[in-house]
Amino acid sequence: MPAPSARQITMTAAERRRLKQIAHSHTAAHQLVIRARIVLDAAHGYSNNAIARRHQVSVDTVRLWRGRYDSRKGPASLGDRRRPGRPRQFTPIQIAEVKALACQLPAESGAPLSRWSSSELAREVVTRGLAPAISASSVRRILAEDTLKPWQHQSWIFIRDPAFSVKAARVLELYARHWDGAALGDDEYVISADEKTSTQARCRCHPTLPPGRSRICASTTTTTAAARWPTWPPTMSTTPAFSAAARPRPASCRSWTWSNRS
View 1: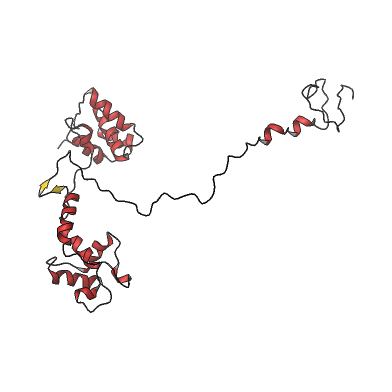
View 2 (view 1 turned 180 degrees about the horizontal axis):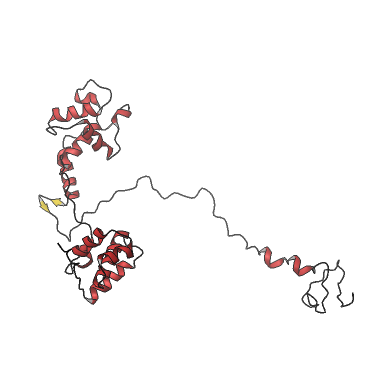
């Protein structure tokens, strides 16, 4: 059976200009740059093997992005597709309930424990009906998101709010881009701000000093040894190494003369 021919790509001048910007970009992702170069070479009529050799990629990679490029979407078709993964087993409300429970003393729940453990927290979550079932590893994974380690602390001073579920639900819905049961639009945004109570404007501990005097660079005031002294022994030449006007003569040094006599 003959091998299928490579897909022919035709693009407009605007598409070609946009792909060239991505192909020569220094800030775009490396994968996106390679994909743009593959599509540009395919539009010029190169074969898959030639494109693979030019960009040092496999032929399957060239065939993939050559076939996936869509002229209607343009460079947006060169991005990674959304990968379907395992659906979340716990809602954001349940995750927040588990974290809030870990921030409580076990004595407040009637548990004869001084510290919470992952297994005890999982058992307490099921007992309270916060989740139908949860494992100790899931509890550790949930607490690791906020670096909560109740089994390494002596006590907790946080008090559980009776209306915690109602208050947390509105905040978590905003993070999930929902408000009053309706999804937010593309032109609606959620802005979260937090005050920095520890960052305060404080007075200076020391008085402000005036700027120091500029210092002259030593290289501008010091002459080199080559400029002060001639080479030794003097060379047999009719042209002196330094002219009388250019050679500095210190007061404590004798003057040197040259002649062509041996």
